[in-house]
Length: 585
Image 1 (cartoon, rainbow, N blue to C red):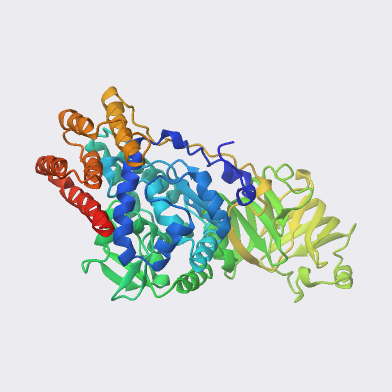
Image 2 (image 1 turned 30 degrees about the vertical axis):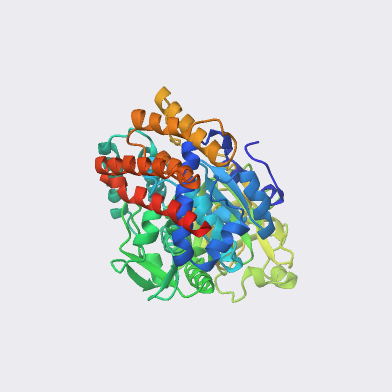
């Protein structure tokens, strides 16, 4: 098992468990721990002034330490107190799976950590983004419920084939950008591919639109007033650079409304505008407004058309509650309503998310088709007929009937049986020796076997995925590529050892190592590494070694001259150390 389970994780369906991987905590190096510590110290110092109050409170409630990368097991012991859990995954996972995890109150955490050269920002999801960004804010009950509800609705959003192509391209970019030694041309090419796909997506799918809402709230959301917004989006909370940049006047602040769904984002560039919600309750209201536009709630012709365009597994629910799950292929329409729907390939029928006995994918391996609507010339829909009505219209076991629907579909055959729902309404009628036609076109022939006709006046819902998760084999997750772990040469391992020694001194684990010798080795063998020098400076400051402090600061000045890009990182690190000791004094 890739993780230690608990009552929340036990409820996860099997198809989600395929994404979970071990955290492998022992694989984090002392450099990784130093990166975490630097980002967290800087963020907490700054974010305590500009983030929503739930953030700092949430750090305590979720047990996230500033000094150590969180251990998933430890996090879960604390998260369960607020009804949540966390699991480790390998980088980006498909959006629908990500949202479905949220629906089960499970936080998905990419367990890798950014490299030192990407300390300010990485497009790859990492444990800083997930653990330090998403986890603390879910301690706010209103926001946590929004996140769960978002997952519940979002995983039902219908995707397009292009959505998956874009997901693969973004995942590829995030992997190569974090991989050491990737040529810049390869990164540029990957960014161009994303740009091309974003510009040629066509009409956005439900998933594309709801992902926009997710981006502008969960990832890049601001809260309170346009004039003085606070940060709550995880992408901003976990990025040193962006948390400062986002509050500048150059970035337009707009009121958060459903219009944000139509505002696309580019993961490779800073966002020109951000949306501000007055409070967390408003997020839920906008989500409900958006859900009212989805096939999930509208059904109808447009819902079936979305399912056909997705070319993926989806479900349609009729007004009797019967649910048809499969890959929708074609539709016959009449007066703007679907009058016949057809799937291809394995199809299952369900009622209230539970598969009907005898109607699994084994029973419908090549698809399913059924008329929808009322019978021609009869005001009463089949679903509303009582036993006497059904008898009067010959819709009865053993009777040979010819049913003509308003849209021109004819079903002729001998009724074998009917399946009823808990309210006693007929939801399925089974025929033998049956022929189904529409305007002379054959839709079903007697030698094909029994014909099962779903009963329903309307399509009331159309959504992504199967109605009953057990109806289909959803264990199909194959990563086209996985995150690239850097190969460590002797020089890298020695540097990690120096970081480990300084860390051990700081936590009181080892007092025999000479920090002066480590610093001399750093100057000689790793003159461009700045973070370890900052860590050693902290020890010198703590011990009141003013001469040693000056020596380290002089070295860091040289590093800044040689690499001006890290100058502000060094300055911030020194300032954090000085501040921490001035508070003590």
